[in-house]
Image 1: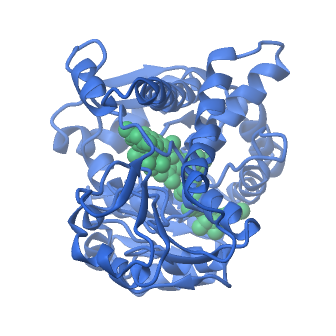
Image 2: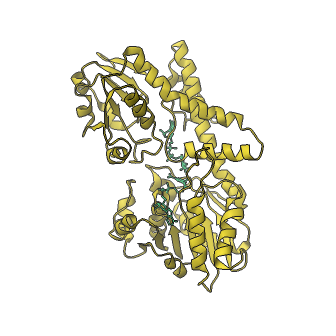
Image 3: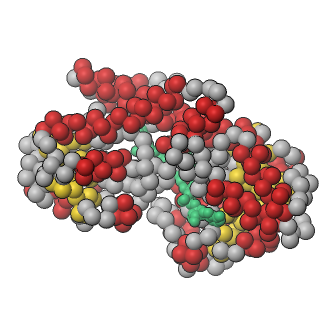
Length: 430
Ligand SMILES: NC(=O)C1=CN([C@@H]2O[C@H](COP(=O)(O)OP(=O)(O)OC[C@H]3O[C@@H](n4cnc5c(N)ncnc54)[C@H](O)[C@@H]3O)[C@@H](O)[C@H]2O)C=CC1
Ligand SMILES: O=C(O)[C@H]1O[C@H](OP(=O)(O)OP(=O)(O)OC[C@H]2O[C@@H](n3ccc(=O)[nH]c3=O)[C@H](O)[C@@H]2O)[C@H](O)[C@@H](O)[C@@H]1O
């Protein structure tokens, strides 16, 4: 089928390249010239394993990019993969979605055939029906359910494994309100369902699909926070939290995934999505206490890590290496990275900070242009008084003699990844 994807960030680029690989003709529409140029030159604008190869293979053939919304006119369906960040009060900021819906509506006014508009972005329940649909109607002069349909297809991919996750989903959720829309969605997803070995396809309402996405993220974020709460209790008793969490994960009802205790969850999604659904629930008069507690535990973990450092010395004038800047391994994304909270605090305390990350240095430089950046973990450790391990990149597990180059060998491990302990003043956060 002919598909258009509006928004070419982590999700838009990944799904465009994957849909092209699955045999669709895809055009990415983005307002950012640099992203469009990069895609048309056959280069992925973001770091994701396997994405470069897909973009290189399909660019100029089944995959192209443009800043011109008119490209939508040659397609059967449009996916909206726009950012849905947080307002200051945590509620969802729909400005990009609204702008894109209006632009799309103006374009669709020129289209004679029916069109399907699919919300891919994470949006609070009722957004597609009450905000996106009406905006497109207003700008196009057309009517939902007649000249165009709306649908919602939440995305569950993780950064760092985006291509693999998209192509091998645990489930595909299709929210729609007309048979015509379900049929078109079936057609779009048929090649993925076949390649992925027939995963469950959940057909549901549009607002249910929107809520499934929040429920999924809220559950996973809360599971990590519960693991952190339990690990903090373990630490009080001198009990090995890893052994405890590994053991409870063997219970099939609990499962071992997302029980990794440590510095907590960051990234562009868990923090904003928990905040958005909490704000949306409050706006309807419900206080989501458990979810708020999960957020509170998560906010505490970086503070606990800094306390462990400050138990050793006042960071003022000390050189502190922060190992790992991305919000998790496998990505260059630093949005809501725990490392940002650590660096902010260290700078406030007057420390001399050196950061290191295998791929996220340039993105972090935009946040902190004035700290030092090392080109290897070994370089970061030279003459450092302390090292804070913020991200569980595999290479940190292999560090050994490099610690001998530190001035004071204080190592606070936020991810329980460092294996060497001898000769170090080592403490794990959990
Ligand atoms: N990043 C992730 O791992 C996942 C993200 N999501 C959701 O997907 C949505 C998109 O997230 P990301 O891809 O991470 O965002 P992103 O910020 O990486 O990309 C968004 C893109 O939209 C473009 N854009 C903004 N306004 C536009 C407009 N009016 N017209 C055309 N393009 C416009 C931007 O230039 C940017 O390239 C969000 O709702 C997010 O919650 C869902 C699952 C996974
Ligand atoms: O909605 C989204 O955007 C995505 O959010 C998360 O994906 P992502 O944020 O890319 O990465 P995760 O692997 O979930 O990690 C999120 C954070 O949790 C932390 N984490 C993860 C797992 C764990 O056991 N412990 C833990 O602290 C990671 O370090 C990271 O900071 C979800 O896992 C995806 O299913 C979802 O599509």
